[in-house]
Length: 362
Ligand code: AMP
Image (cartoon, rainbow, N blue to C red; front, side, top):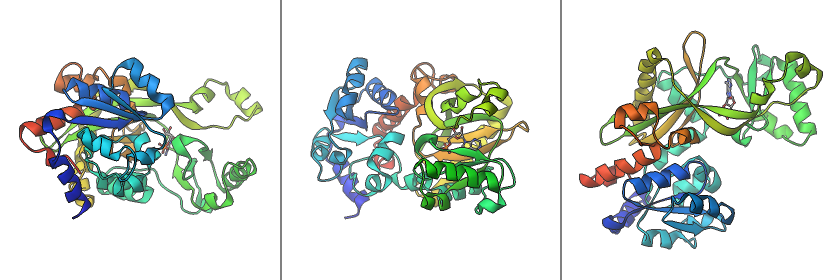
């Protein structure tokens, strides 16, 4: 029996009147759990002891299961059978995937997941991600393989530099050598890491994180919200006058600490839909059955009003958290109170009405 058959078999054994939606307590769990309850499902949060109080105090979880290790939810783990007994369907998010690991989610999390688990690889691997976006006709920053060829302001990203920690800008090869040596001296990166660095053209403009939802039932892409990240310390650095910046070198970093909502000029919305549609179309060929549910295109809008994308996330992003009560765009599509977390649960509910849940589960 393939893993897909096995997972569908587990789902077929579930009591459909008692389904629950489960996720790990972090990232966007508050809105996922809140949305599950709003659509009439039981909500379960899986979290480390230090996170319990957050979910208890907001009252979003019908059940809190404490984990000692994230591996406990994998097949054979202490909590695995408990989740099956709870008729649990899993919703993934960014911290879920990074805490458990893409490989383990793909192969050992043999529980029903809402969404396409085969697409995760395409957002965690920079080469696959680039291939996907370019095939979808989306512009990306130029990448330089050999640091000697750096010919413009570029951002240097290292693997494992989670959440933008340790990224820095370089203007040319000498700058690259000086700044990587500085990082090696401080033990932040190894010489081996330098070869694995991604050197990407730095795009100057306004960052916009475009959150979409693709409904496999409606076969349509919805725009759900647009946000900007607040990143430390780069956002603080811009408050320091240039003279003081040059007098005392403060290392930049791009660590996300929060998100703020934005709205885009209306004339850019056609391009936003065009990009979302194209991403979904290409995904069907690359990782069948393709994109399902929430995804986010991380872009910078230039002064030519062009969207340049530097990343895609094939799952809910934390940038939708400002919209727990709904965003201007979800309001237009769904009326008040529709978060993307709730939209995920709504899709399951709609599927149940037509006996089509298996379309959404992998
Ligand atoms: P990432 O880890 O790729 O999501 O990047 C973290 C942060 O670095 C982003 O939120 C942006 O602020 C910044 N960034 C990444 N790539 C670029 C780029 N090519 N041009 C300008 N800023 C970038």
